[in-house]
Length: 189
Image 1 (cartoon, rainbow, N blue to C red):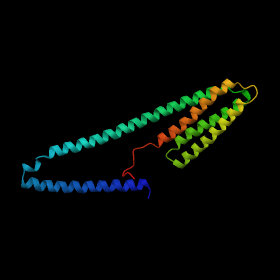
Image 2: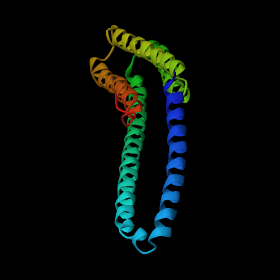
Image 3: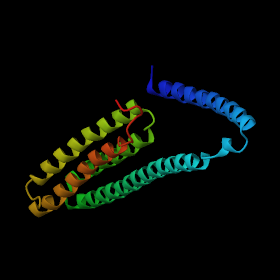
């Protein structure tokens, strides 16, 4: 049985259980209220306050964690965009005959990265796009290294381009892991 089905069954069971317990509590409260009108309500305010405080604390921690993960993912998107832009601009340092092929692979790489996140609810399709992007990373790296070893290629240009490519490739791992970062499932296994 899938995790979603288990979670749905658990949520339904908890909801039904809460309704049953609410009804039981209402009936017990009415019986106590009929027997002792003044004593039945004594001491319940403290318990209610503690329960509501605990629920509020849990909700606050949940939203705080979600907000921090959202901010982190947004920052990673900006970093990856900047790194891709920097690396693409530095492709102009390559010899003209090798530049067009690398730029074409670069565009396919960016399209694969974008498609991976567009397809994200479909994990298998997203992983296929990430694998395609990884293959294009290797192709881009090989083409740039080969272009840097051509006669007449500027050695300093490759010294600028390879670190930019490396940074661009490294951020993909960081973003992929950030997507997998979630609160632990309940019950913890």
